[in-house]
Length: 337
Image 1 (spheres, rainbow, N blue to C red):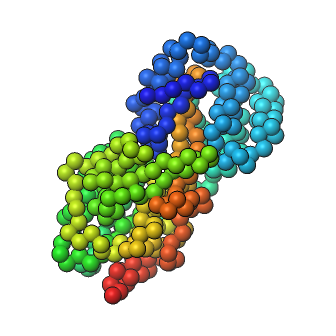
Image 2: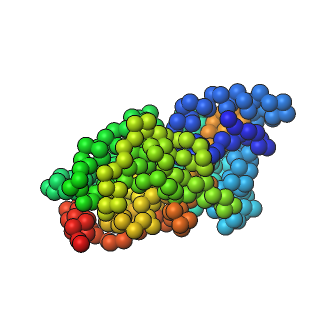
Image 3: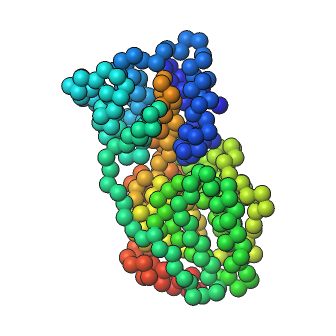
C-alpha cells in the first residue's frame, strides 16, 4: 500500500485527493508498515531532526520545488526553531507552519499524532452557497455541494438520481451549480455527474516533474490512472447526451469544486458562468512521518482534458456577477438556438 522512501513513507496514486479517508483508514497500517521495516530510523528524539526530515520531503516533492531557494528556506526555518529553543517535536510546530508558508500554494497540511493540524496562513475565499429554483421544466438543475469522504459512495449515487429524475425527451440543457463548493471528495462529485460528462478523460493531475495522472469516467466508474476511486453500480445514461451544459462557479468554488468545473472545460457543449474560482486546484500526496504524523503535501496541479494547468484558478467563459444574474445568463445561453 505504501513504500519506504528514505526516512518516511509515501502513498500516492489512487488515494490522491482523498486525504481524510487515507488518514482515518490507513494511517495506523502505514505507521506499522513503515516502522516495522529493518533499517528504518527510530523516531527522532530531537525536534530539529524531525524538522530536517520534513524539509527533506518538501524539497523532494513540493509542487513548486524548482522555484524555491531551498538553502535560504531551510536556513530560515531551522533558525526559527533554534531561536524558539525547540527540543521536542511539539516545539517545532511554529517552524513547521513557517516552512509551509514557503511552498507558494496554501493547501499543504500537517496532521500531528496529538490531533494538532497545521496549515500555512491563507485568505479564505468567499461566494454564494445558495441553490436556486429553475422555473423551466426543459432545463435540468444539478447543485453539487461539498462531499465528505464518509458520504462519498452514497453521494455519487444520489447525484445520479437527481439527474435521472429530471431527464426527459424535453430536456434541452443542464445547469451544474458549483457555487460555494469548497471541495471534499472530487471523485464522488465526478462520478455523480458522470451522466453529464459522458465517458472519457475529464482531466489530469500534473506534478512538478511533469508526471501526469489521468482522470476519466467510464460507465459509472471514476478512474485515476487506471485505479477505481468511485463508482455507481446502477449508473444512468442521458436520453440526449449532447445537450448544452452551463456550469456555475464563483470565488468560493475551491479545490475539488474547481476540479469538477475543470472536467467540463474543453467541451463544445459546455460553458462556465460566474466569477474566477478560489485558486486551489491542486492535489496532495500523503507522507507518513517517522513518528506516525501525516504530511499532506501539495505536489500536483489540476489540468483540463487538454492538459492546460489551472494553477491560479478557473476562469469563467462568461463573467457574470450576482446570484440571479448568473442563473439568468446560463438559462439564456441554453435557450439560444
